[in-house]
Amino acid sequence: MKPYRIGTRGSPLALAQAHETRARLMAAHTLPEDAFEIVVLSTKGDRVTDRPLSEIGGKGLFTEELEEQLSDGRLDLAVHSSKDMPTVLPEGLGLVAFLEREDVRDAFIGRAAPRLEDLPQNAVVGSSSLRRQALIRRLRPDLSVITFRGQVETRLRKLDEGQVDATLLAHAGLKRLGNTGVITELLDPESFPPAPGQGAICIEARTGDQRITDLLAPINHADTQAALLCERAFLGALDGSCRTPIAGLARISEGRISFYGMILTPDGSVWHDIRAEGPVGDAAQLGAAAGAEVRGKAASGFFDSWA
Image (cartoon, rainbow, N blue to C red; front, side, top):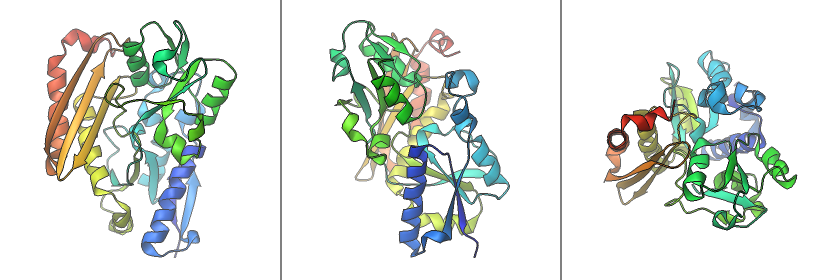
């Protein structure tokens, strides 16, 4: 039998996520490693690193090449960071499984000070995320925040070279890379809420391909899937993309889902947040309703800042 073909980007973090997915599938089905082939593709988001994502097309930049090969059958499944996924996927494709979520928190890596609140006035913080940029400005409007792209290793090297005084990365990614020793502070998700989907690996496949659906079913984590349904519905109601500072986190306990979401202006000076709770089975409806409600809280001028 031909090996299952698993598509991934080529960064060390993306490869770690693809290897984790393969290991879980091997264990779930008692299959050897050669039953799976990891196919590495370069995406536009990987190739163009000298401009902000918001200027070159947003989240789809990390998925287009993978989705093209999924659609035409060259790949059987593709492994992604959930926070990189657009809310609208190409026709015939869907997110069919989610691995159990890692820590959702943002990690602060400081050279001028170990904590964000202790940075000296006018210190320079680098981040590629508009959400992180806006949250930093919300908490510390005196700081200089600059766009800071590249793979994890590239950003850490730039930090060590003194190009910035601090940067932020996802704790989950650093854990998967075995590189948590660089962290100087883990940020509280109440004051510094994560991106929707942060910390979760998702698997995209062709909808209606029962062979692949059955393959993935044993490694799907139901609570993570429900949380992501809620968070992605919140994003969808707000037309969330890499051009928009949006945070959102759903947590599940004893059959209930609680959600906290926030939208900000890019300069962090204005924000609106929302809390919602309901049965896990209503996860998507709860997220969509929260998105609609927080949109209603914000005057139309608020959204002009997202243009």
